[in-house]
Length: 83
Ligand SMILES: [Zn+2]
Ligand SMILES: [Zn+2]
Image (cartoon, rainbow, N blue to C red; front, top):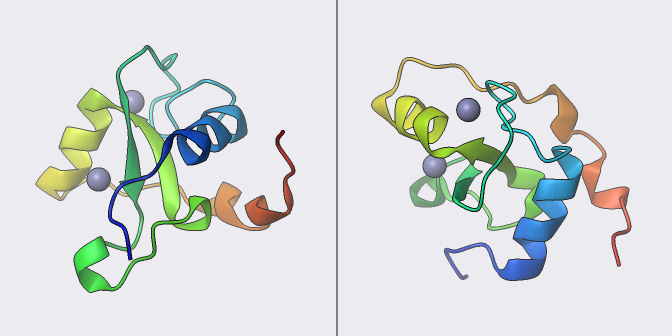
């Protein structure tokens, strides 16, 4: 399975996140990351249902370990149709 989110997945995430970082609500600039909620190394899938749109700063913090990610919005996201 591929490891990186592709363009359309990132677009989907961006819209689902309302253009904001899902951790700190800062507006997402050109540079932001799609984060695997369940790590790829732990069999996390590369799908929008397992991803969060995060600004670079939050993404770094999460990977440093202390920060809990909000996941409540993840439920039901796959039903969204984005053309
Ligand atoms: Zn952030
Ligand atoms: Zn990550």
